[in-house]
Amino acid sequence: MADRPRSIRRQLLVVLLVSVAAIWNATGIVSYFDARHEVDELLDSHLAQLASLVLAEVRSEPDETDFKELPELHRYARRLAFQVWDRGSTPRMRTANAPAQRLSTDDDGFSDVTVAGERWRVFSEWDNTHRYLVQVGEHAGARDEVAARIALNMLLPLAIALPILGTLIWFGIARALNPLRMLSRQVEHRAPDNLAALNSGNAPVEVAPLATNLNRLFARVQASMENERRFTADAAHELRTPLAALRAQAQVARGATNGREREHALDNVIAGCDRATHLVEQLLTLARLEPASFEASSEICDLRAVARQAIADATPLALARNIEIELNEGPAVQVSGNWRLLGILLRNLLDNALRYSDAHTVVRVDAGERGGAPWITVADLGPGVAAEERSRLGQRFHRLVDSGAAGTGLGLSIVKRIAEIHGATVSFDETAAGKGLAVTLSFVAAPDGARASA
Image 1 (tube, rainbow, N blue to C red):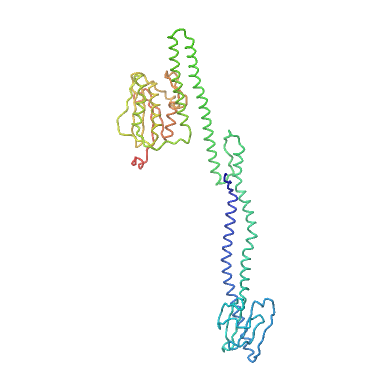
Image 2: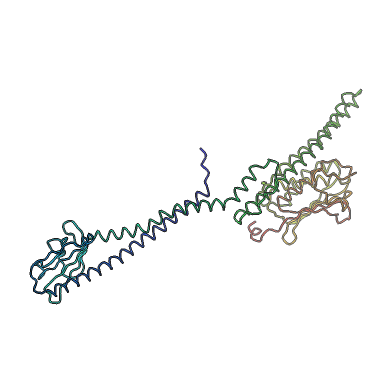
């Protein structure tokens, strides 16, 4: 079962509300304990003041010896009670809600006691003659009630404000995410072949990079699709010619009246098949190099060793055309790349050089380094290429007019593509002898650390 898509708006709302509630509650708890401490001190001071007042009243009536029980004057008076004891043992005066026994066994200061199952906060004090002991008590529940009201007053605004805050956050996030929804609708409703840039004029800075990268992706896909369309059209055109030639030669062989004529037509059929096979191989090679995701491996290759293998592969064609291939001597020239692809590149360069060179000439392969940057050159002594034509070399299916050499027009396209994969550049120049064509492949200099590790 597929996971349910996560909502950014819901996630932000939950995180913000939970954070606000947690901070508010933490603040409430700290405020509660701080207020409880302040309330305790304030009420303790009231107990002490009340005890002093009672002592003053007792001292003003020294002849009164009868026990007095004071009535309750107000319903809130139940929270407070006081007792006056003569010599600390004989009751002299008390409120109606005070217990018959002493509130606390302590004779001086504050104490927390439990009398008849009720908790009291008691302040005890003697008069200056040490005859009368006054004990003033307050129900501990009254203080708990005050603390509970403080906590409620802290949490009640949160209960009211949190839904309002959640609603404001919900609509605020929805407004902030509008650019994303607009981009989504643009992509959702466009045709598959519509690769025009997205409208991101009012996109915020957080969304603009996404729109920019999407537009760049669309541009690359459009360029790739146009390239593929041209490639398909050109390939269809190029394949039509050898197939038509094969059909024509097959018809000639079928209608031949003698064996010699038939044999000549069949030889042409075989040659046409070879040309078609070569074209298909080149097309397949180029197609495999097209995907942008292709990455060259990072193995260390010796250009001289790759060149020696490519020369060995090209030797049959060189012998058939009476052309010699020379490779200059020197130390290993190391590059980071794909051995197989570099071999295809050099074989295509040698194949071009051998096809366009005259018999009894030399094709030179030179490799070396300039300033730490590896390079390799394949030079022939053929008719060469005019300067204005060199810029078109490497275009698919482009062949020189009146060159007289058979080919597909894909060899240098493959060379350029492999060079691009390796981050190298391809340049076309005259040879040092002033004739022919020299094709140079130049690599980027490797960092010192990479060269040392190699």
